[in-house]
Every structure is written in C-alpha cells, then in structure tokens.
Image (cartoon, rainbow, N blue to C red):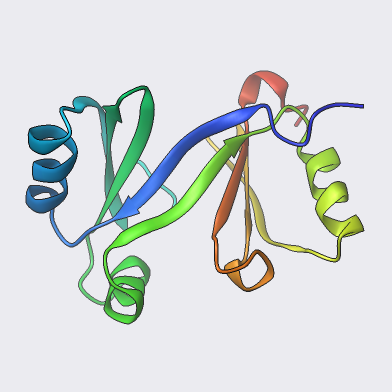
Length: 139
C-alpha cells in the first residue's frame, strides 16, 4: 500500500503584490528567490517560488482585478492559500480521503501532472492541493 502523500511540496501564499511578501520571505526571513513561473499557472495569477529554510513558498499574485484569486483575497485576505503535497498515486490518495467522507473538488491535468484539490470546508478550513508528477502519471 503506498503512502497517502510522499512529501509536503510547497505552501501556496496569496498576496496582492510581490513587494510585501518578498520583503517578508526574502529580506526578513532570508529566503532565496527561485523559479518565477509568471502566468504559467492554473488560474488568473502569476507565481514565483521562494525557498525559506528548505520550505518552498509559491507566491501567487492576481493578474485580473476581478479574477478568482483577487476575489479570494478580497473575501479572506492575503496569507496562506493552501498546502500542496506530492503524491505517487492520486487515485489511492483520493480513495483514502473518500473513505473518510471527503471528496475532491477538482482533479485535472496540468503540464502532464495531475493536480487535485480538497475544499477547505472538509479539512478544518485548510485548503489542500495534491500533485502527482508526470513521471508517475499514467495518462
């Protein structure tokens, strides 16, 4: 039987601009800027990575003032958006959650990877994202 998750992949942070979050993650906490993926994302935002003490933060900045991420920030504010886990077997992970009465809200392909989300209402207010890399995806 595989593990439900293989590791914490990253913590997704939502912010209105890069300035404030980079000040915190890089200038104050000493993080190192990583890959800037621009708008190569699922959604209406641009993303960039910052490594702080071996933990990868994916900074998400809205690109559309009326888009989905902007609306989430308006409603819930800036801060931690979700925790992302790497999984080796998405179907197994989804089955374990289903066995506990938790359904996935979305499951889709993105650049060959399989990406799925659990709604925070089912996980004590914590939004969870799961990614099965293309190397372990059979599609």
